[in-house]
Image (tube, rainbow, N blue to C red; front, side, top):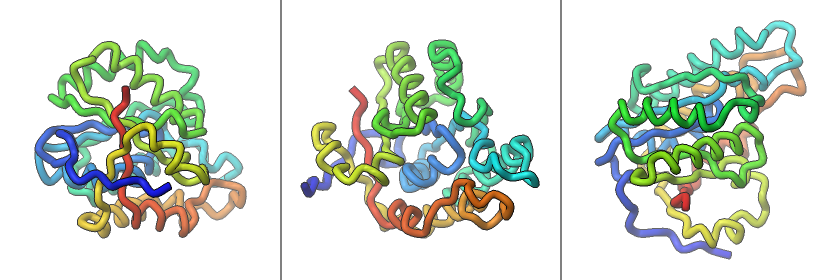
Length: 234
């Protein structure tokens, strides 16, 4: 199924309104929302709230402890935001343990996010799709759902990461969501630079964990070359 590309996008996509991206891990913000954030940083402003510390991507490494890896991934995320036109002040690092976000109190975290986002002056929130199979993505989507009940006047959008990569029926699956597409071409170089900032996830930093996570070239190219996909969260 070929989905029709939306010609006009609602408020929150044009850089004229401050936005917040909830990222389960460092790199999700660049992969799924790099263009969106670059436009926001060039206009009214954007902010990334990273939910976890990203420390579980290379658990087999002896050289890279979870603490060391978390510190590195925070630095990589900061560089990625800078590549997109933001600054270190545009990052909130919550630092929950990677792959264990499902263990937190969703309502309590949503209440905390409510305060933080209100202080930022944003009313457009982007969170991962509940269709993504990773537990941290699903947990972030559930936390966003709790936040929606607190702030029904805000606009909430979902973005896919893993479901876009590993669901062969992705286009058909999201057709009912009335997806919105944000053109990649105008910000392609910036987005690629942001993804490349996550060197630990590209196989360039950690040499002693052959089973650790690595973004393949095909994976990176898909997210760099293709339009970003979002849909209004009901």
